[in-house]
Image 1 (cartoon, helix red, strand yellow):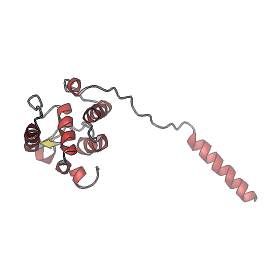
Image 2: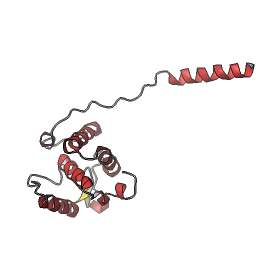
Image 3: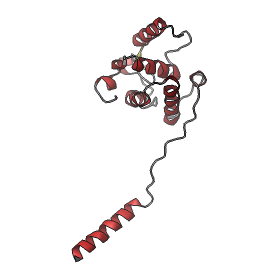
Image 4: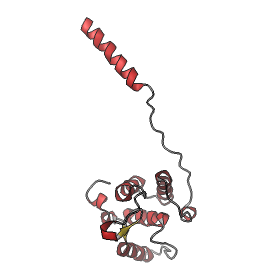
Length: 151
């Protein structure tokens, strides 16, 4: 019985000691902005802002936000890794190759979506096009979706 009491005291001390000062991280407040407003921002130097941008666009167009966030993290560390992968062929937040971008734009035009203003190097535009592609069954163009790391 004494051993059980000592054990209980140790557990209580451990829980209270390790629990002190530990707080759950709160989700950043996401200011919802429209896609047209977001695409005018040319500086995406903060992962929190990139996350908010992806969330805003996903919500505006009913895209799969969690998959998009996962792909952005896996492909470019949420846009913070500015290098182009695949020997310089896959660039920007979602690491889209220019021919793949052109193919998506062609398909969007076939659905009567105005794409004349979209720019390959614009983070918001890549987010919009990526969300559209995933929603339209083209997610297998991203390795993290293809290999199951992002669903």
